[in-house]
Length: 323
Image 1 (cartoon, rainbow, N blue to C red):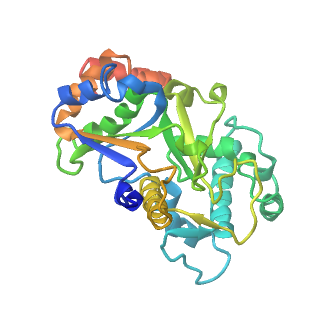
Image 2: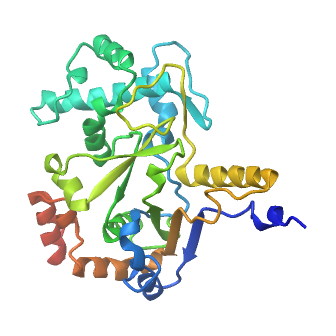
Image 3: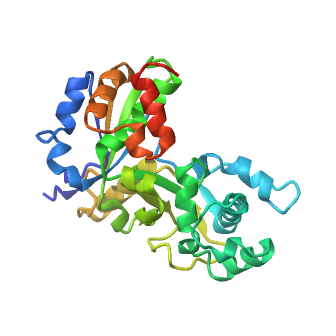
């Protein structure tokens, strides 16, 4: 009897979740002898102050609000969904980053040289479109904008899980005073480094020069870029194309579910079946303070991740317990 249909689990998720109840349990899991620590260099890391957050770039979370302000058509409103047409996305992205660039440039702040943003608005936009919306033309500015909390199509990660954990607890300690009310769990996302290299058609990896941004260098940061095809950002796009804006975690779950279902119908295995692509590790927000002390002892502080005289002064104030 052929049992191949029974050998494939169509409900298998590419996301493995580990719930830790204490700081000690959490650290044991990510330590050198733990499941994450044993393969430390296999992952990119992202920390969030709530496990309810999905892996979605900030531009997509705020797209409707921004697009309504830049659309050239009266009464043109974006209807929320799982896709955005490339023309609308590129127009919104161009307007936001150009405004950021021009304000910084007007005030004498050094930025990468981007001719598109120094041209007349319509000339720059036409040039961007005629060149197929090549993201490599603007990616250095996008990386800076992302770092300073402007909405972009990028999602930031780190090579260092301790850096990711700093951002997870920083939101809790400075927004909720350590209370586990609004942020029930600290969350560490661990993304297998193979994901951007596989032909998933959703994201690709973008690197920026560390020398031009000391903060990104200190944080060992890197970005995932939402695209519509498994191309690198220097490839051209075609007007009318569609970008899938599903969160990365949901997209991968749907991808594996669909491929597994197809594998069952064809009675063979799928190349994604059985792989864990994302690990999601959570811990109660009440454990944020012992984790903060551990990170400080490891040299992971605001002053080390945002090297400036301002952050050094802030850290000095905290050490002397005054504002």
